[in-house]
Length: 331
Ligand SMILES: Cc1cc2nc3c(=O)[nH]c(=O)nc-3n(C[C@H](O)[C@H](O)[C@H](O)COP(=O)(O)OP(=O)(O)OC[C@H]3O[C@@H](n4cnc5c(N)ncnc54)[C@H](O)[C@@H]3O)c2cc1C
Image 1 (tube, protein in one colour):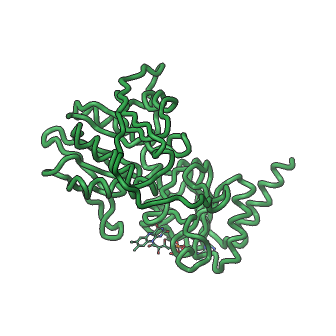
Image 2: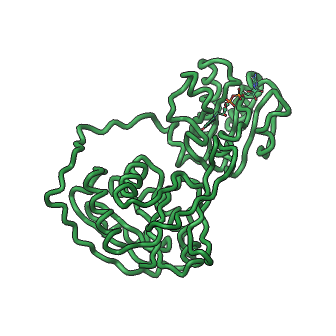
Image 3: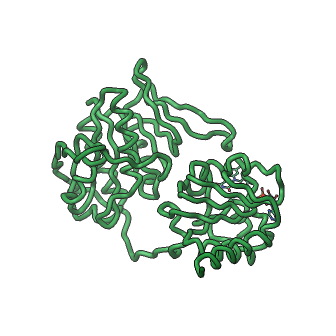
């Protein structure tokens, strides 16, 4: 079947932003390929979610309702997903590289014996070969590799949140075809059992949704100096990010890491404090709207992507900005 599928991940009955980002990109791929764009929604009751998927360009929504889809359980979700892929035979399947997607997509790909390109940063369609061009960093981020799956179907890729922009269809949402798929999981065991839900971190760690992020790097010199980053983040209403060097040094939790092996972010404002701008860090933040860099080395590569560069000692610059913002708020 000539369809492009987007896995419409939901959590607690709310669609994950990455699903809408993938639909936005999927529209472009559908236009180039002539394939139909469909979303696959596994949830307890997906009725309320389908209109949002149509609004982002899904022409069809496969709705699979079952109490076992209230939260992610790999055995049941992958069984239902793979059965539908086998029945309908889509050409392309796109999945968000969330913790759920990073479990579901490889499980499905291994059962289906098809390829899977993880963490793509660019997707395109070649109308001549009819192949999905899946581009991602390789060799430690030093080259961009474009990967194709010529022999097996579906062509599967995961993409991290915030790589593509989320754009609803212009004009009034028109709706689409809703396909209610019967779910039969009888006899399918589930080896996973949820004992309790532990939510890690506070608001300052919600990097994916943050409008502003202040990130600290090794230039801080010690874990205690993260207090400077936190103070600036607090006055700006920003989340706190970090380079991998600081995470590896144990200065801050990995939940804060930005970059190739951390989170990809796209805030309106990104402030890099004492971060050199290694390619692996840039891979996670360079599409931010406005980048401000504070670094004592005028030749630091972070200045190549910065909109505003402040050359100097962060121990002087950060408190000065904090004081200026506070003074302005007070005025
Ligand atoms: C496969 C792979 C994946 C990776 N993934 C990631 C990733 O996801 N995210 C990531 O961040 N890195 C990642 N890295 C590591 C990356 O290559 C860099 O090592 C790392 O980003 C460096 O962190 P940093 O900028 O904090 O430290 P440094 O490179 O040491 O930079 C510190 C900066 O602070 C400046 N500085 C020092 N003192 C001051 C001062 N007083 N005031 C102002 N500035 C000062 C220095 O001039 C310097 O530019 C990865 C590496 C590999 C090989």
